[in-house]
Image 1 (tube, rainbow, N blue to C red):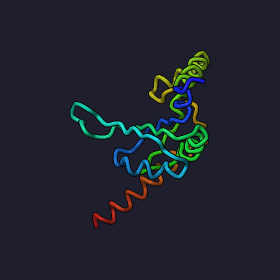
Image 2: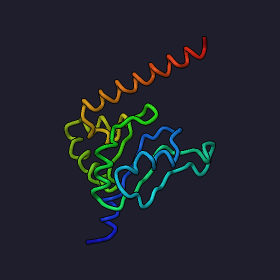
Image 3: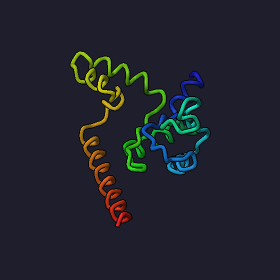
Length: 151
């Protein structure tokens, strides 16, 4: 078996990260699920946002099982009011293939054009609704805090 394939199976892509989440916070959130052997927290390297986080990262676990457990537990979980998007790094090709097969039906194509991306199209309707409800709740709580500070 190719060692690069193994690495892809135990490597996670974490997206939709709030820009307030630090590398240390990310590691703390994902460490309960296994031994993290590497982490790539992506930063803007040029332009007006240079030095700011890009909103996604990669975490490499010791085993495929640890990565799958972290994906199962953390995908859709709220962090700073935003649902995390977690997938195995090697899944990108599979999701794009699945997206291409649904384009004939129109649904996958529509999701792709609206910027939802092929991967987000895989999220269940109930999970999307739950994420929206959680986001609304967190916004309401933030509003109450800001309103109290203003008084």
